[in-house]
Amino acid sequence: MFMNNGSGLLNPRSIAEMRLIVGGGLIPYYDPNGIASSSVIPPPSFGLSWIWQTLSDGRRYIGHSGSLPGARHSMLVNEKNTIGVIVLSNGDSNVPRDRSAQYYKILENIHLALFQCFEAESTK
Image (cartoon, rainbow, N blue to C red; front, side, top):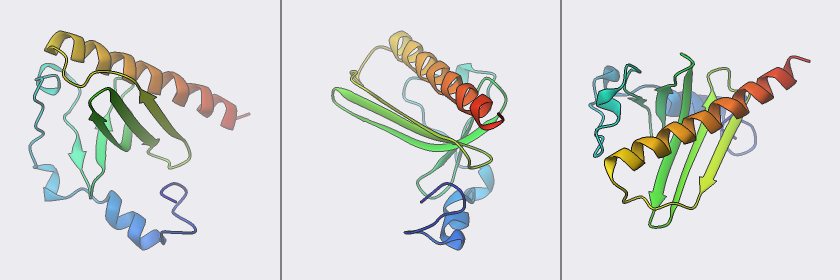
């Protein structure tokens, strides 16, 4: 497990290695749509197949995303490692820049709403 310091498949040392930011945070982010460069949010940092992202709520999340023709997905875990959110969607990964920016904003809003919901539940 990736969350809660691992159990079952991965040991805590493996989890720590995966989460470690490589390249001193200096690996440039390639964004074919130019979305990250037009934002005030810092660009993501990279671990071993994982991306650290700061969303519009100012919090850092670690996750992974990808797409195939007709499908997109994104998985993020909060910095405390207590809540993970996976969003799977049917969508074209080859859309114009303005529609792609809209998609990423919608995806971020879904993630933030779910994190807020589950964080509120976990504090009860």
